[in-house]
Length: 196
Image (cartoon, rainbow, N blue to C red; front, side, top):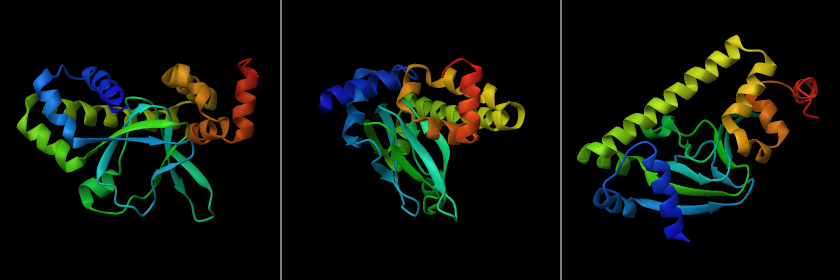
């Protein structure tokens, strides 16, 4: 299965950067490949995950658990996205949230320090890391704007546009948490849109 996963990883990464075959093959020993079942935890609140986990296939989520034990989705992750705890990677702090597979997921993991070594020794890997960070910043900026400027329906429409064919893999309760509404509000929005 690993050659198939390597091909998936190459296909995803090549959307950002055109790697030379030799530089790509030299990087493969840094990656490990994992399969997660639906609802399986990738890392937990309080863990110190030192890797970046790139999603090759499947859907996952980041979530917090508040003092009352209620889950709150921070983000949803689809193929070409990644799981990591920036707090851990940059500050050495424990992860403040959980990462979990929603559906079965194939993951390629690389230690952050190895990714940085690659980026410092190879221009294409440097470009890849820069684009990875740019994509993260854009996602955060757009998500913040959606909560400040959009209605519940507009946020749901944005979700459908972003997740397209993967949207059916995500339970509606996770979608509601992700767009910041109650299950009842999401049901009303879907009814207004003729989706129920």
